[in-house]
Length: 636
Image 1 (cartoon, rainbow, N blue to C red):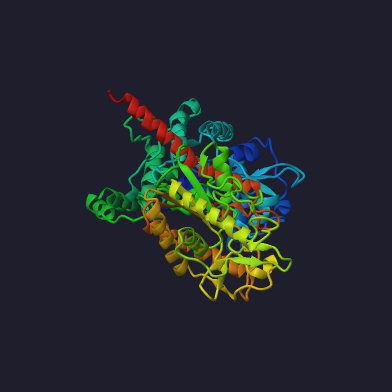
Image 2: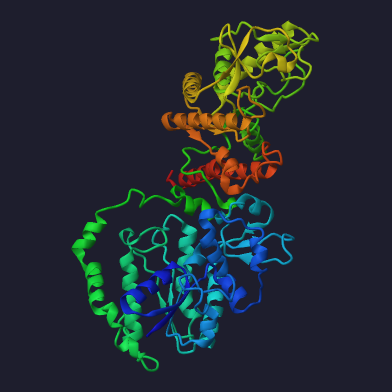
């Protein structure tokens, strides 16, 4: 009976399964080589060592549904257990068979090398530093492990992968000099929207044959098949594995080569069982049926006519391709932005405190951050908070506040109660009560400064070319007399008496209507303005709802996100930038928050701003340079 060993991924494993089913070959071992460098270092050369299984299991808590698979995959990392993925535990492991058994065929492939990252122990987390080809997504305590114990490394370059496989093949040749070794080059049939992975697979397949020259390895080029012959991004359709098994069978038994090269005589006697395949499998009949299906053009045409609507989608549409397989720093959720910001664009920002991060980035990059109220305009204005906002309106937490700011600036809404007096006699602008620490000396001073301020607000609305608004809160305080909305209740700033206010928690429908109305009004005075919406990732510091602040935070951010989505989908030149998703996404294991899990860390801000710059600032500068080059190339 012909014996076969598989070392690699499902590419070789499923082909071996067909060799057993169709031709009666005996699969001695199926060994997962999740990363060739790990396999070469830890199992072949043994130049690196792992802690004991018990040590690793003492920190890993498997998800219940992953327990069995997780333990099996961990066993594949140890020499005494490797090769038991589809082999009974009482059978010899891979390295025992390599040392003592007669192996006829060895199948290798590099599919896992094209996307797998090693999970590496952080310095000091264990007595020794080491890496594992295991994903933390199998663990219940994934976030804790990612934060304190492990970190993900990069994927292999083609050259690193080739170097590791050469080491493995040399070892195999030493242990099994007469075995026929086949190497399946990984394919990129379903990864055309991942240029990096396509490049890695292509370069590997091109360079591998030369690297293995003289080691007597049959390198099978990558099969770049049509989508109809793919089950998903990494797996062929079942009949393809049957065809590959047929090719291996013919090459091993008869020396047949699909490229019609001169047939090489088999090296040594053909195993008796191979000359007469096991009768119980009826290989000839099975083969005939299998190849009839593969070669039946009518059947293939029918199959090709059924196309999944997901077939042509880019990597960004799939969680595994765009998140699970990437390091957190590589995740970029911005897809096809509608516009970019040029260095000559006047940019204004408003919203919650997170909007200030964008304004600081724009100024640091030398872009034109529009400030229409740069200094005190009245005698009563203290030199505080100038330049922090385009006009000194402070944080604007709710969409209704933004709408009413526009209405107040253009005299379309005049709240009855817009000046408050504190218990110690200080006067406050009710719509920005904390804009200056000591308030105003008189009601007249507060009103005078507000008039000058609203003139600056009008200039901002009319002169900006890009307006960025960060949606922050759904909760607010509304006047029972005229519906004016305030950023804070009077009692929070030392005001004992004011017009009656009611707590309000806006719905997504109300905010969507308010935001559409605001944009319509803004474009009455500034027809060409482009608008960028973001949602603040900062949780509520407190809620007035009779429920847990976590529940209120989830509602608030969900409703704000729905509002931003509805408006950006339906209104021209309105773009959504996913700062909220970048900070709060589960893929980064809360590492972008400070210890209080509320404030965004400098690392988080930097990550958001790097993606913002890439798509909206650098892209804008590149577009302008391209336009200049085109203009310069045109004949006068």
